[in-house]
Length: 122
Image (cartoon, rainbow, N blue to C red; front, side, top):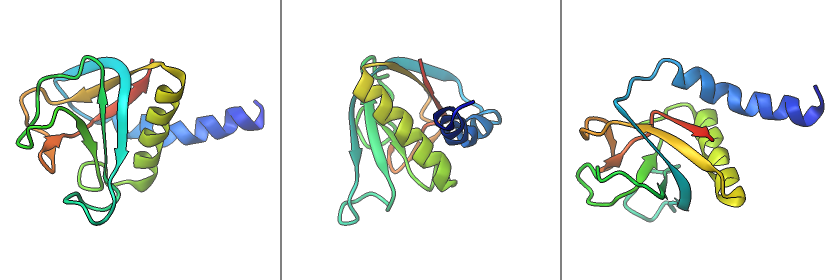
């Protein structure tokens, strides 16, 4: 395997192992519409980012925003958060679809938005 293949394998290793133990009741597939990294002066916790996909599910938790949220509260491992962000950036840049696992009954929320169990690049 070349250096690039090894780097990609290492990048996604944390995401795959973390998602193997997750439970969820729904998935949504779509292209990435936007990704927003929150600054420390906003109402979100540090290291929080939100994103939206086409075919975004109607679930909004309590915020009223139709977007997914990733933060240290829902994904405690920093490397896994970086891996998720890398997947989203790659999908946005290439136009590829992502699959997002979430709780459609608003049972897994983070800062008022649906939290993410796992992401897959389709």
